[in-house]
Picture 1: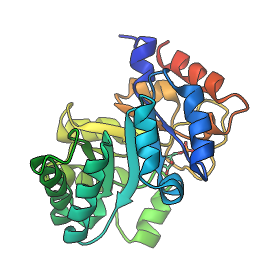
Picture 2: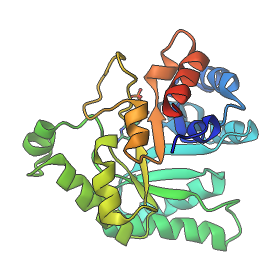
Picture 3: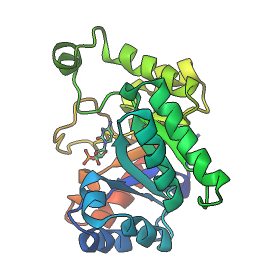
Picture 4: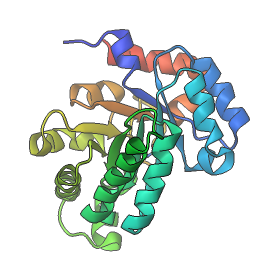
Length: 244
Ligand code: C5P
C-alpha cells in the first residue's frame, strides 16, 4: 500500500552535514514542520556541540545523533549516558565494536533513565558496514571475507542479541536483515540517490522509491537535499516519489 505524504516525510532523516550551527539551523528552519527527522553527524556535532541537539528539539525535530561510537565498553557506556541526557531520539554505535560494547551502550542509556536524567529512551542503532564500503574494500582492506550482505546480516544478528533496536545498512540489504532479525528490527539506510543524482562517495545505493519498496524504515538523505539549489523542493520531490 502506498505511503501517505506524512508517513513518507516521517521516514526521511535529513543529514544536516553543515560546518556550523548557523548553517544547519538555516536549513533546518526551512524544513521545520515538514515532518522529517534531523540527523546530526560528526561535522556538525564536533563544531556546534550538544546545543545543536537542543536547538533542533526546540524546533520540533526528532533528532538522530549519528556519531557512530566505537571504543571500549566502559567509554561507550559513559558516552551513551551523556547522549541519553541530551534527549536525542536515536543514536548509533559501530557493530564492529562487538557485543560487549553494544550492550554497554544499552546500559549507558539505562543508567541515564534510572537516574531520572533522560527525557526519553532513544533508539540505539548499530552501523553494520558503511554504505561507502564496496565489496573490494570489505574483502581486501577491512579483511572480512565473503559477500557484503553476509557481513551485514552477521552484524545485525549480533546487534539484535546485544539488545539494540536496529541497524544502519544499505537499502539493498534490508530484506536480508528483516528476514534474519524480524520485521520490528529497525533499518536506517543511507545510500539514497534519486534517479540521475550524483553518487558522491556512496557505493551501495538505491532510489527513494526502491528503498521504500524494499521495506526500509528510515531513509537518511544528505547531499541530494542539502546540496540542491532548493533543498525544500528537493525534499518534497523525494516525499512525492516515496508516496507514489
Ligand atoms: O550526502 P549523503 O546522502 O551521502 O549522506 C549520507 C549521510 O549518512 C552522511 O551524513 C553519512 O555520514 C551518513 N551515513 C552513511 N553511511 C552509513 C552511516 C551513516 O552514509 N553507514
